[in-house]
Length: 371
Figure 1 (cartoon, rainbow, N blue to C red):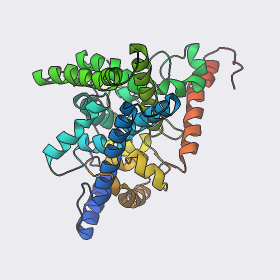
Figure 2: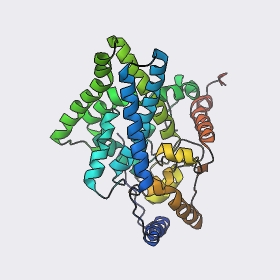
Figure 3: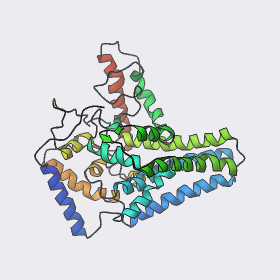
């Protein structure tokens, strides 16, 4: 782990101070809460009803193998949407004013195979503070040795081809969470700069809810349907591949696209820029005008607003984005937007190619014939 790092800019970010005042004024003038509105509750009911309906339809055994596999894929996608739309806001404390409601909804993370306690540390605390800083933001350490997102890291031979295989690896994101990643992070001495000192109940929660997840999505199908163990395990794999593909693609498009920075500390090991200004240089929005993206991605397509105002429910991001964009322009700060989901995918592809094949060539190796 690299040295202790902090933002040492002694001047309050004029940009963030102004943006925060304008956003506060917006909610006061409109007379609305920063938390969930009717649309948020509609989305919550839609995703939960959809998820459990698919689950019980699969267990019914009424459908052909092909249809069942299709429903399993959609079930996995719905798991990702529950994480994006409900759990993400709940763990940030932005879904409701009630901490009990937020905590209760955050427990849905266990349902889809993840651990809300660990997510709070690795995402809310570490990623939101040290965004895109190599050696500190573990979100850009996707698959060490296989995927290179850190310009200071030496390129190996395999990474020459990362623009070809990375998207397939992203499909393993959810499976890794369910079977490997949470266990590793839990027993590390620290996550980022956060020293791990877990409450005793979290040891129980980790193992108990992992068992519940495995039982619901391997054990129950095995008992309810005429399946062998390997067939039940294959269904579990298919569900998580769908969930992981959706999650993995969306997470990368907010920070690893053309135009985003990967800043490094100064000689004293500190960041000289104000935290909010840092967020503007390391974060991007994509498909900001797409109602479909907004409905399904839980505000993750508006990461700029989310990083600046994580305590605001994502259904309000379209409105406050106008304020943030105007304020950024007033303070000569970038506001990176990519028009569509497809354009963001292509931009991420080019970044992978630049950090892989092209970087390998500039290290003194002969260029490879990779398209």
